[in-house]
Image (cartoon, rainbow, N blue to C red; front, top):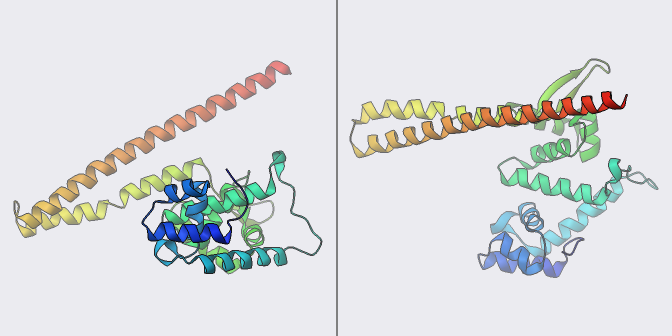
Amino acid sequence: MPGGRLTQTERQHIAAGLADGLAYAEIARRLNRPTSTITREVTRNGGPAGYRPDLAHRATQQRTRQRKQAAPHGSQASPQPYGRDTDAVRDYQETLTTVFMTSGLPKMMARVLGCLYTTDTGSLTATELAQRLTVSPASISKAITFLENLDLVRRQRDQHHRRERYTVDDDLWYQSTIRSARANDQFIETARQGVSILGPGTPAATRLENAARFLTFASEGLIRAAEQGREVLYTRTETTSDSTAEARSDHA
């Protein structure tokens, strides 16, 4: 598949495909591009209804100029660990950010989460996040508060440097999933109250009762799956750690 930035001609083809009601995957196939490239392009430039190829092209050029101006004159990007390609990592971070946005996160919150997930430590300070994303500390603070409320980021106190670090780890997906399942509880309870008020067996009451039953079943299944997934993940992690420790002792 071809790499590099989208051309203006390709953006015009994307606009034509959207106008014809084509799915992102089909537009990507016709352009011989990854579906994630098309998804990111459309999401960050107005969405399916507001995408304009000329505006998108100019916006990309402006972002490229801003990125170059943000870097100190004559400096080079810090080398990536493990021999990673710096441009590939940056592009992947943008793709991951787009995925978070399409799942419902606001852009700034998605950028922070994408940045954290593409670091090996999974942990950065507000200053580090602001520098990496070239935004103000206030923007980072607002994004972190939002993500914390969704159990997508954990705030930790770095005792050595006396500053807070913001962390993503395996357990956060479990916590977020449980929170999402529990978010249905209030509606379920309210729907069941409506059944008695509207009269059991009436169309309105039956509609609410069915909704409550469905969400109860779905929530219980989601919680059960989260518990099982957490157990499998942690067991595998502990087994791997034990095997590594044994291998090191054998070589000692």
